[in-house]
Image 1: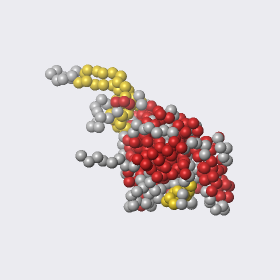
Image 2: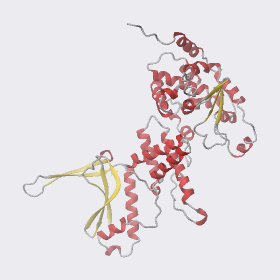
Image 3: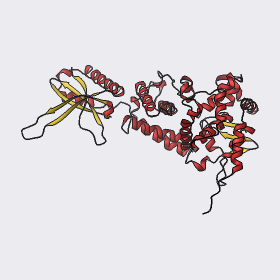
Image 4: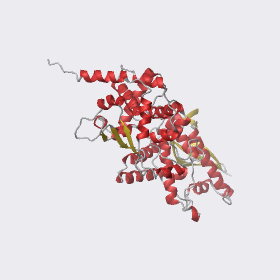
Length: 453
């Protein structure tokens, strides 16, 4: 029976990576099988350096032996060699075959095996969603496709390779590169989960026993099959901490900022809190503000809900200083706030807030403070401090109902009066005088005058 070992050759590829090969031993002979996996030096450990002398008069040749230390690639190699062993065990007269015959056997792909490149599928969905006008959903597909390419270091990925181990390693890789941005560690796998559901619906036919796609990687993962940012943050509070009344008051009372970005982050955090957890993407795109009512459709859900994620928030007097400070003065733009003229897109705007919060958290004394903390703090304080009913909090956060409640709500005309009442009650818990005085003084000073030389 042939044996198999992983091999990393010492020659680097042009992009400074090493290709993994499987070394097949049989009847005293060996032959290499190239894999599609490439590793870098950080994935390897040098186990031996040899100096091999060649013929007289020629230079000696240095060879290096490497051991793979990356758990992800170790697992890939283990699965691949186990697959090779199963094929050999189920092949009659394998002992009489040459090593060349065995390599041909292992590298010849069955013609009837279903294969589909999920990276290409994500890019196809990107183009489809763009045509439908769903730019945000389209960009998510494209971003995840590019992220997968960087993770696997190749341009194609067969859908059958997306196992639980693959997704677990992918999430660990995302966390390693994005410790300060936990949202993408949830969003990206969520996009993959949705893509798998779509592909199974398209290519599987359970009634007729056709199961082209059998992988179900999210079944065993902690977040569950449908990964949502809220569920992950509830499981890991340190990623987006809930602030206390005292901590929020400390943010309100801040008057000195080291950078403009820090001031922006403080203001956006408070604006989100005062407007019942509005997301930064909705602040960026909002175009309807009249008669003290800010109306918007939640970008996150407007493409998949019957009410298009409609939300109406009454702007209380405490919010007016920030509304005035950031109002849009460009007559060519319909946006309520000037963010659309200052930042290229909502992603750039959100990154600016995130970096400002990184600076701000030291002054406030809240580690890992995120923009999402404003939304989470509003809901937690509403329940634990103001003792507001959970159903009312759900309405305030513009969440959908489950089960029979969703059916019942379909018969009730939507109104936001109760939401406004609860938000007013929330704002009364704080002293906003310092914020209002600070912005009043800045408005009175007006723009700085340039001295003529």
